[in-house]
Length: 417
Image (tube, rainbow, N blue to C red; front, side, top):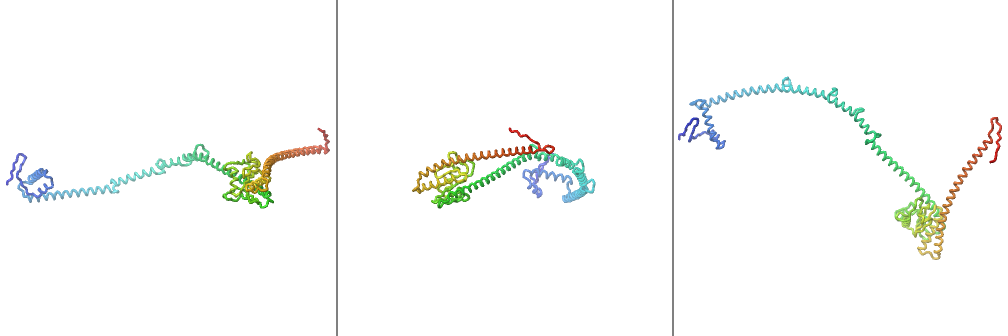
């Protein structure tokens, strides 16, 4: 069937056209169907322009050959131009990268780097007056050098005599602390010395009490004395300085006190509780506290009885200690019902008299001590008067024996007052 072709000006309508062209079919398959009319229209336009250029009636094979030659010619010319361009570009690139070529980029970069390096080294050279390093060294010298700001500041901060700085406060604190430590050490040394003196004084008093006890029990059949002040007892303590074992087997514990401080009686720390601990520690039935000084409360006096405890004042002479020991022996005998044939009432009356006599002895002793002090004072006064008298006698003798200038004795008239 012949295609129905109509031309209306520049518009060509082709109906019922079939084309067996694999290239056209492949081109259309690669695109979406809505683009097919536009592609067919463009293919016809290109083909028409080609036919118009090559001329109608020319053999297609000849056209293909001419097209190939044209393409080869164009390709060769293009390759030549590309090669020429590449050679020129390569040469230009080589010239730009050649450090020996003064106008090259690399040469210019090296020159600029050299200039920058020289400028940089000049700014960092400490020998150059206005360089960064020279100014830094100058600033550091002003800050850290001799008589610099830092040295002045440190001297001010580290001066222990300057007021208000930390070192002065620290030095003051250390001085105060060392003063406290020194005072503490001196106080402790004084306390230790006083303790040693007190301990020694206590041992001396214990020696006197031990000697007195041994004299008191001498002749008492079966009685003996033990000094236990340095030995632990059944309570793992050392309370109870002496233990007197009587002929009956009863034990009496004795606590010796050589202190000038008042001895309290009651309470956990009082002497009565201590006497109870001493009796338990030494397994004794009676306890005695003997004090070298009259430091018991006034109501206790020189001889105070508190059940199976007695407090007496005895400086080691032994009289009051013997009375206390006799009271203890009698009390233990009464408690053990060993008082047959003994007039307990008479003993109690005598013990009461003993307490009164003990108080009198204490008063007399104090008076005697006062008298001795007065006698000693008067003796000192008499010694001074005797010395003054002898001095006056010596002055008179020198005056009587004085010679005049020519060697003759001078006669001195004596007049009675």
